[in-house]
Length: 334
Image (cartoon, rainbow, N blue to C red; front, side, top):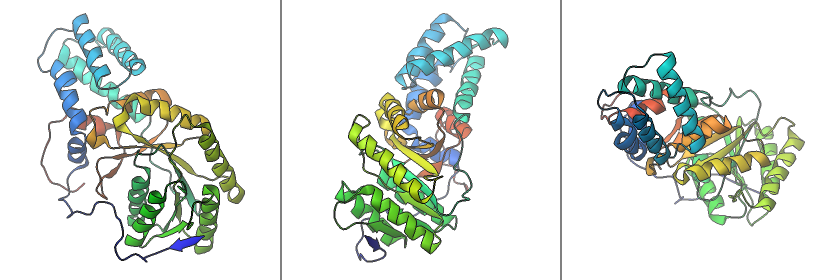
């Protein structure tokens, strides 16, 4: 077992760019959600650009646009049912009233999963990262480590993706760049043992947080899903309450398939939080409403780009406001 720290003179890092001017979270989300926001604007928002009479035709068109935005059939039906009831109970008069009610309903759906990670009480607080290859899991670990480091926490990384050498190298290089220790094995080995040793090292060094990578796996690969269960059992030999967070990383660009992934991962291990990545590169960000409505699993963070500061705490109202907003260049402190 090797402990890597600041040994590579030319490490592979997350994208390093000149710091951009600070902007409000709303504006950052609006920019990061550009493709999804443009899709909403072209379809859903434009439906309400003029004050028109509420009709079945309006509802039919809204249904089509919600499905095009990857909100999903089940959640779309729930939204439309609520709106139709609201027309009667709240005496909505026109399409602008309906738009405001739609926005309120979308905020309500996402508010049920707006739940930041709890205050870190245990030491070490163990975060187990899971997800399929290509979802951005290892990069998210780097951003998450930097986030907690900025809050003053001592962080240790466990290179538990022992099946993919590039993932280990990426994690080690990131740790070297930011003075964060990484526990890894020189050759392919047992993921559970790497994470076990990392937690032991964290206890000895009084580390606050251990963030453990795992091998990317398809949700249909039962043998690899069983290995996740093994990792959890091994971790619990050290701390019966650990891992304190099992964070599933989902690529927003795969739309409704992300919902299927989440269901399968949650069947294998108790997923306690979700990070949605690559929202900046997709017009299918509407899938977040299906995940919130059908799974009720807290959404912790959203990823809006490759930059080190592009991982943002999830906030329901700000997210929905960004979908309905016009892009702004206003620069203010977040």
